[in-house]
Image (cartoon, rainbow over all chains, first blue to last red; front, side, top):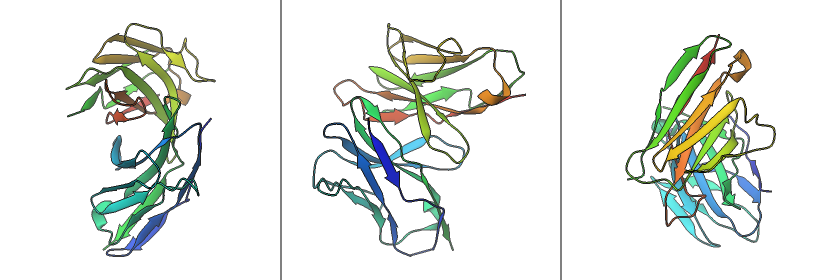
Length: 110
Length: 117
């Protein structure tokens, strides 16, 4: 089955700082890769995705590149905002399932 | 498009009672729906996968008699927690996938907070 290793949090940054959240995975076959974001008390929202090697997913200033050789899908943002404070989940999807990482709590301070 | 709703958003029930949670795809017909459980500050754990008109497939360790899933139509799936106990208190999240898309491309509901007293 699939597994995900995600950078443990919590991560605390100042506004406008650079963000990296590491994610590596093992998966059956050739997975699609997703990052989801969860705001307090809410469900998950898709942040970005990539479906094949070297694809770059991007949304709201966040980016992640599908690296097949290192089985990684690290999330980056050049300048975080207070509104980015949330929990971020990396999730490979294959064999008809999503497998979620442990989640990384991000807090951005003004 | 691709909006999924859940009802109720919060529910408090007494130990021994049953609670039903609804998951609806509002603007698409869902080929497959999923139910997840999330404990505080933890990740999502898949409980079961359901397809319209057929029995749900439960993950290992999930009691199918306790967590009854009905997927009666292409836009509605329900999760009934039977004879609830305090340890069933959790955040339950459903998701749905659309026809013509990979089943791993899922759209998530806002979740239901269940508290059993």
